[in-house]
Length: 253
Length: 209
Figure (cartoon, one colour):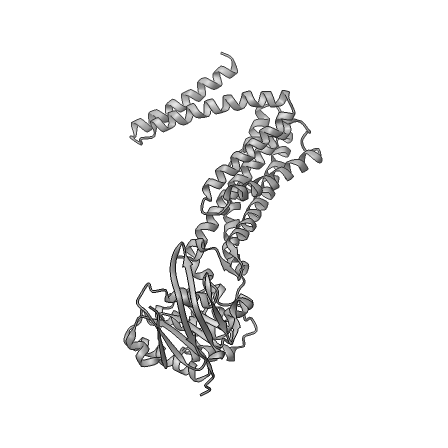
């Protein structure tokens, strides 16, 4: 049996085990697991074909990255529906830091200037920015609702709107950064992250894999922080009204 | 006791406010002169809170005017306005930290003497300064919020249902506190649905219909 066939058989086997466990313990997840496994198979097959096309036609790399960025913006925007213009704001918060970091990594020669390097790098960084944007935005919206009376108290004491929002913004940005900080701290001790594993399986030396993983992790840290900060800035622009007031979404109860 | 004419205080004329598509106030007038306690009487849901919030620009009016000392409040920096006109919400939120931290918020230069004076003016013992603000009872919070507003040196105070959750004795203490502040020259507007409280403690009454 070829390695590729073995991988597909193993993947199906794991999906079947998960579905059987769900049935045995009456978790009601068997159907969902089956659908998720089929979707994952179809999506990965499609993405594999698309990537093969992208690698042979470099111009398509830009289109592929654009689709990833738009999909990320739609996903994050859907999580921040209460925010006016959520998708556009999410698109800016995700793409500006992710693409700037990708460009910087390619320019300094950390990765070769080819679709084979650029597309996965952009993908990892867009994915990280999406996570930070969603977590930061959700946390900020929740905290603005839950702490509306505290924010109003600050306004009444003469704080400007930005000063009144500052504690909630700090908490939101911190929350958005927790996963990547934990991932960076625990790398190699608790988990072997995807880039490292992928490179090792692909035949790279452990030193090459470690160096690549390090640059990806630290780029992710910077991109996610920048995405969180950018999103909170864009949210403040949407929510702060003239006269140091906040949009009714926050303070009308 | 200093008496001043109406032009020192707040004048609301023909105010209209719409919130979330609902007309909350329409054609409303209100006068809050200095050195007097004004009782703003209305049943719950009549828009008292919205009216007070409009006076400190927490909500925007569609039409009408609000002046402070004869000057349109829209011409004032909102931060300056909110220091000149203290607004204490019905359930005032305490900021993290001690009562002293709350009173010093935004006025770092506030000395101990001024801090204790503000507490006393709100009928609180200066020993309250070290208490954790978020552990206080509802009545104590209302007084700390009052003291906190006073540390900004306001000309006027707008209080939204300050006795809503208090028993008669605690409400009477609030009434006495307001009279003490009035005697120091402050203009006070108490929005309340409690006719008896307004009759006992307000110098003048206005009704929001």
